[in-house]
Image 1 (cartoon, one colour):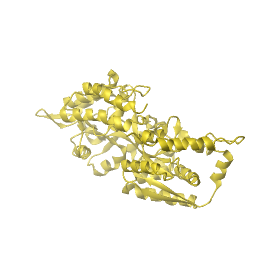
Image 2 (image 1 turned 45 degrees about the horizontal axis):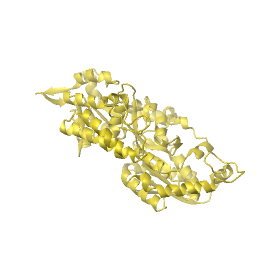
Image 3 (image 1 turned 90 degrees about the vertical axis):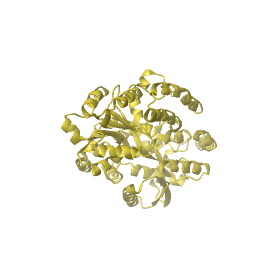
Image 4 (image 1 turned 180 degrees about the vertical axis):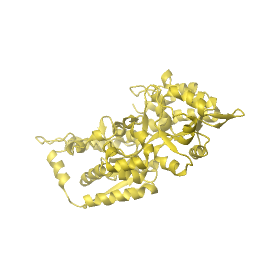
Length: 441
């Protein structure tokens, strides 16, 4: 059952309420329908209030979160924030659905980036636009793609909080010895493969590079970088019957058949890929920037980072989670919730938060700050990301993405595990994907 349909009664109630409260004749209003004088009064109100923050922060991120909570309490002593761990993203999302159905929601929550369109389309998140306008938030200081990832249908529902993107982590010691650099374009990949791949007795003993097959997040940008797309421009049909939308998979199959490219799929694939890299059985792996520290701490060679190569365009996609306000939160909590969202995503503590969580800074202005300079001196590998800051793009935004993405992920699985030709399988997937899309019209 689609979340959009499941939440329909809640959405109708919210719309009905909005139509009643937004009818005050002769009252000056903000863009969101809230009287400006009321909004200003709410912003200045220091009545004690408690809000809950539902999150999926892992144990390693808790020192960073606790620091932010302590700093927030210093600035807003009348606002008490209760952090509530709700498990992994999928667990958190299920609990949010249940909370919405019960009309008992937290004021603030994390949401994984690919799930935002489904929730936003169902009307459960508050539009932050009026608050952004009222407080003159500098939206240009964020990466464009990071902001776009937490917007839907021209409304800003959240801000990036724990952000990652996929990058190529490479064995710099090895590549320097070979006199090669990570490919920046698709045209450079074949030559890179020839110089780096090692075969013994017809079997590959060292792969040039590895791309994860267990998550579409890793190969979605390859689709768009090759000039293709998952869906048509109007997002009403699958696009895997178009030549440009097949190039990525056809290249993957060619490079795998040549023995130059490794692709992991199934249980234990992530650990296996990581070990192959650390054992120098693969020279370069595409992985989330969130695990860069793991590679730096465990590699016995110098580690480098390169932005993934492009062809028709060059981009990588947002991963991680953002922070949003729940639209059905009690009215007396919304102003406090906004202050917390704004504080957690401000430039002021952005570097400290990034260091504490292992995720990326999200503000352009912090790069040249004293904290930022120290951060990049300590972790120069992140420069590859910030040199391409505005090429970090949102994932495909469609409420049905979590469902239909599994269909073409299965195609990759058959290519990896059964050596199947992905071209006819992707063409066949069009019908299945279109059946899923039909439920969202």
